[in-house]
Every structure is written in C-alpha cells, then in structure tokens.
Amino acid sequence: MSNKYEYKKRFYDLEKEEQWLNEMSEKGLAMKEIKWGFFRDAYIFEPSDKKYVYRVDYNPDMPVLEEITSPYVMFVTGTYKAEYVCWANGNVYFRKAAGSGEFPPIYTSLDSRIAAEKKQLLRTLPVLLLFLFDFFYILSDVVGEGDLGKLSFILIFISNIGLLYCLLMSCRHVRKIFELKKRTEKSEGSGYER
Image (cartoon, rainbow, N blue to C red; front, top):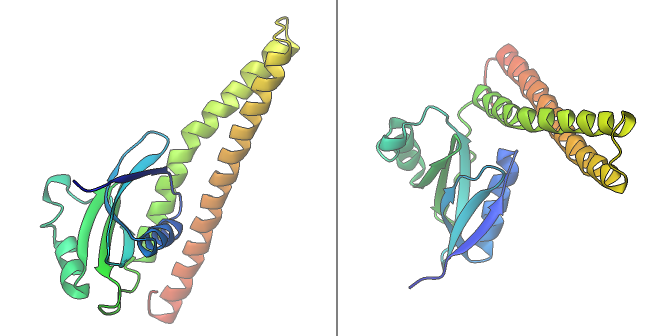
C-alpha cells in the first residue's frame, strides 16, 4: 500500500502552480490527481523516486469522458513524449521525466492564457461581492439602530480582510489580462506569437 499525500491549495496563476508542482517533484512527490474543492483544491501526491517536469495548460473545452484520447492530449503526449496526468477546473496537467529531453511550456496561445485569467477573475468576483455585501450589512447594523458591540468590529475586520484579498486578486487578474493583451498586440504586429 503506497502512501498518499494531500495538499489543499488554490492557485490563480498557471505559472505559479506549475512551479509549485515542479518543486514538489524535486521533494520526491509525484502528483496523481486533483480533486475539486469549493475554496481549495486537493492535490494528491504519491512518493516517487523519479523526478518530473510538470506543465499546465488551460483548456476548458476538454471533454471529460475522452480526456486521454482527445486530439489535444494525443498531440502533447506524442510531440513531447509526455504523460497525461489529469484534467481539473479547465486546466490540463502533463508531466515528463526530468532529464529525458526538453519539455517547454505548452501554453497553446496568448488567447488561451487570457481566457484562463478571465476564468480566474470570474471565480473571484462572486466572493468579492459576498464580502462587499457582508461588509455593508454589518456596517449598517453598527451605524443603524442595532448594536453588535465588540462582535461587530471583529466581523467588520474579517470582512475587510476578505474584501481586500478578493479586491487585490481581482486587480491582479485584470492587470495580467491587460499585459497578455499587449503581448498579443505586439506579436500580431511582428508576425509571430509567443
């Protein structure tokens, strides 16, 4: 029976997620699957003597029942001699044994990266609105006739932290979308796409 390790995380940046997976591989852990979670996903790892290079790409159109046989997966696994790991939350995960040849980033296009950032932004907005509504509700109760005492200040503080975090994440995604769009415009002007 093999040991399994579970790490609960949520990434809003494909490059950071890829970097973290590669760091985990350096520690001797190979990712097997990802289980979706409402706030955080569960990354399942098993100990491995092999070191891998992981690559993550955004592909929301991937048919769930035909993951392994999809033309996209067959193209990546055939071209780079990589192994398909899983598909989760619109992201496709591949790996290749370290030292068995080059495995460059596989982002299909800048447009797909912009779509991934927009998806992450849309994930953040409902939480942002919830914290914003919560903040004003608590504030109206404190300023109005209600008196929540010390509890109200604790709730406002927690609501402000959540609101600030979601606002910063939303701004980061919007900034990244604009940066990617600028790169798209530059690459269209020069005749090639990075």
